[in-house]
Amino acid sequence: MKLRFAGATDIGRKRKQNQDRFLIQPDDNLFVVCDGMGGHLGGEVASQMAVDDMANFFIQTRTDDEITWPYRPDKRLSILENKLTVSIKWANWNIFHKAAEEAELSGMGTTSVAIAVDEKHLAIAHVGDSRCYRIRGGEITQLTTDHSLLEEYKKYSALSEEEIANFAYKNVITRSLGMKVTVLVDTQTHSKKAGDLYLLCCDGLYGELEDPQEILHTINEFRSNLDEAAAELIARANRRGGRDNITVVLVELY
Image (cartoon, rainbow, N blue to C red):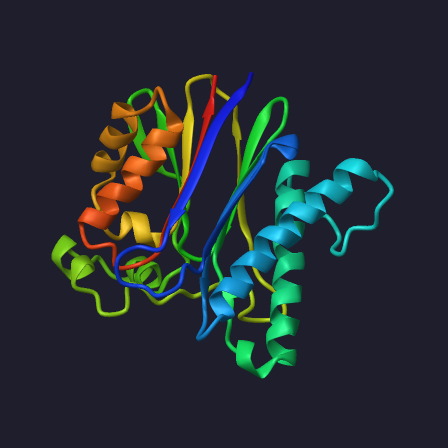
């Protein structure tokens, strides 16, 4: 089974800097979206460090089977889930310590959502509120759950659609890389199926295109050219206001 993929990022219409980063590393079938946060240049530094550290970990483990991992693998997880988890934890450690050492970067952090694919499986890992969606059989499904204050409230209280829309702290996240010296990473593994399409994105996309059906219809309209599909998703988010940086990565199995 082969992969088609595309990625794009845009500063949006309101921000002065693009603190998002994405990674497409075909040699490892690794795909990542990171949404940085922090004053001045902190968000840009954190998100760039995250994609660089994740990329380098996958390169090193591909080329050297004897390399010592910075964290012990979890026997409950698949090899792909472990590689994603350890790469994110390693990036988190580096971001946390760099922020501690350089005053101008204090408080910086980033989300991360990532996919890795091998011969039989596709693994997903995420920290924060950047999301992974899957399109299968004409339907779109959000596979990740945001690490946000809103999601914490929803665990304990049945909120109406109006209450969710008006929730004052919906953009407050409860996990990020760089927040603490260690980070909890959520992972999942799926069997590969031809025709599946995965979307990685930051809140700059789904915050403007709030109805997943609009995301689905946009991708389907341009599915023959994933670069055009990514560009159109960003264009539509900008037309809705473009209040944040917008980043998407599309991965299709065929």
